[in-house]
Length: 204
Image (cartoon, rainbow, N blue to C red; front, side, top):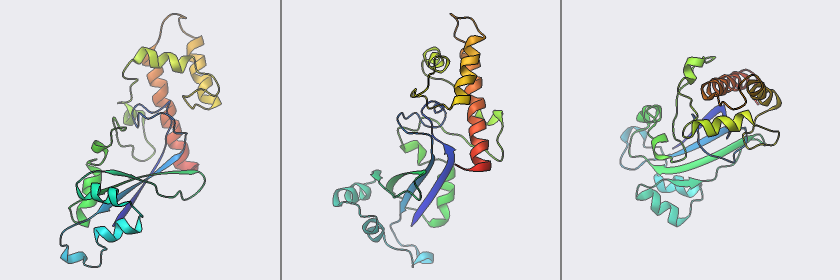
């Protein structure tokens, strides 16, 4: 069985410390494909394909198939649904029933196994600043804050013109030598929420 999970939250290396600490991926809606392969008898779902059949359909190599059987997670390259979508994939063996999958995902068991994901959280509805209270510029908060305050077009932070202007205004209104880490973090949360709400309302 294949479960596709689409995250409408844009990825940005700059606004990323709460979501994914992974540089080099542009701002895009990320479709994460979790390939859930089942083994063992499942009487109530006899029509489901076997793990080997699913792995064959995914064109996984023999070495990757063996890794999956041994309990490892392997990278998989799904195709994007459009030119504005970034698809990332992982394949692994989950010895459980289909009815348990939602619970497994919601408990973030998969996220715990992905080294590039350092933290995660839940935003519901329109979202609020409270949903992003855990976002912090860590580690090296002062160094990270300086990167935002000194942002320039084309910078790796991947901010748009309006977002850059907000950080530049924060810098202009403060002490030239001081680094207002907490104010920068608050602005990062504000910009993250604005992006989330924009994508939720208008999409990409």
